[in-house]
Length: 258
Image 1: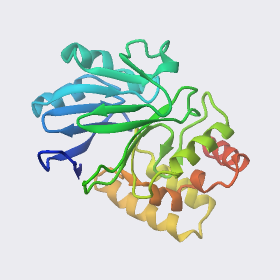
Image 2 (image 1 turned 90 degrees about the vertical axis):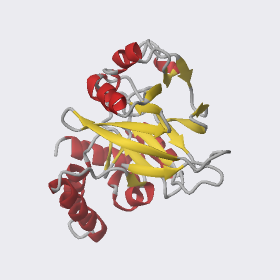
Image 3 (image 1 turned 180 degrees about the vertical axis):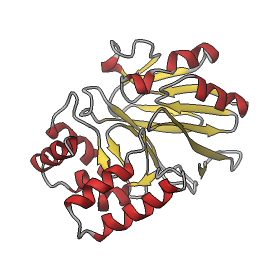
């Protein structure tokens, strides 16, 4: 669980970003401030509902990065329990996320829990994929956070189901321009597998080797490897290190068949 100090006009309340691991490797992130919560990409209803109710939290919004069922499958069930909760998704994906109540586009700002998220178009994994960026707030001590769905992973990137290598190269470059201390809250625990692949390709890369050792130890202990940081990704993630879209495309094709 990540605890981050939130800048508020009348208090120094902590907010938290906590994981709910579900299915084989999905992670549903829950951003909590006080007794309010925002859920990101809920694949299932019941684990999230139970988690929120156990803590007496009020769900005020669901953030959807893209339309895949393991990201939206739990949303409608949650809104039955919390009917006032907003569902925020890409305006361009209304057909595949028809239950969205706030439709957003690249560059839009969303005010939630006295914070302001920025929407970033990262179409590549799917043609309407978006990410949500929570910057460091004035007078706060927190690190910025990125909810990036299936675009940027620990040591990897998403498969190109609807986009091209050029699309992913553009998307990752947009994310790479964020502050290096940004915490990466992606939607799957793929880090160890990604780093094993990268280490097999570049066995003499000590940064990748050292990160793999650290991640493998965490996983053996039953702990998550996430969130990572953007600086960590920029030094060990082969897709972020790719210098051209052609290089990224070759890496993605190799990883798909590895």
